[in-house]
Length: 522
Image (cartoon, rainbow, N blue to C red):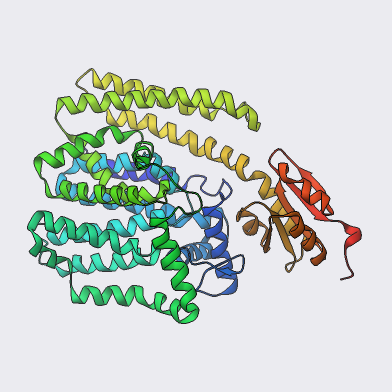
């Protein structure tokens, strides 16, 4: 295996995560709400309690906001600045997955693990998203990589790795709360029990490590309890932790097999090699492969049992899955090799056909019928799939030529697909937000009727006032001297009936302003 391939893989990862990173507008809801909350933090200079629309926001801990704020300082308060922390975390994750796999499974498996990670749907989406998940995945990965190093031959006596386990667990706790404790410690405890019996669980715990964890993570939580007291505890721990596991939050539910579908899509196109990696882990009992399997299974089971389900929840399972995929790709078992290439080829061909069908049927409806990116992406998927089928019926493993086609596939999505999705989903709201920013004074408000789109607050830099009934609209029209209002076009009737003047509309959203003859003397 050529040892010079890592820089090429990292370069591909950097290209797919950084190229035109700031081109698509921020997507509602999650990207926009994190970006706006961080903007408010920078403006208010309050570095303890994040706010959204002027109201305390307890959904997530503070670390990701700090990272985004630092990025704002360097790149400005814009789309690139909001997304850069996730892109950096993703690139680092690929690098450290390579290092760990190389040390314990060899160069070949390490290259394949890194390659399959950099060229996957999961990587493409979340390395370019201004949300916490890639940062969480990096911190959990570094925590568990550090723990594994404490158990590995030749490094077990070094306390540095155990301190790293506690340090990165603390950072994960500061990124997304209790999950930053549950996964690192739960996986470490189960692995220790499986490989060394119950007595070996003691090696997970260290008094100095606990003190380090407390010194890193406790100050912010303590400050929040002091400042916001019971409100913080009820909102942060009860609502956004325990209730997310036991109840459906914001309508995000799914069947028990939900995450099987998520994994197949998220790890496309390399998912077909995961069964071979799992089989190898079960048969050969290699310590790293067993560790990765336990990690993958525990994350999968935990979130499958959770009532609230979202695709991003499974992202912490990406690193162990990539290790196992790398193992599967380096396997010499002919049966698994043929099966993996055949299923990868059929899946790629299915994606190519679906792209052509979807683009012809739906793109004309959103005004981009002449877009060329679906054809490029479909062609790359088709040729890559055909090459996979050739490998399945020959004895050749053409991973890198297949990877070239996948680079073209994902590049087409980056250069065409994501901007097209942004224009359709966010373009109108962006224009309306800019209009509001130009028309309204800093203390004037935007009325949003029946919609929840934080991107309006980010791009307008104005506070939003929600309304859900005609009576509320009438009251707000009389209360505010001057206001802009936004609603779905199909819901425009109540605004017109309440005295708002229609400025413009399209098939999705309508923009209103209070009538000029109703303006009071300033």
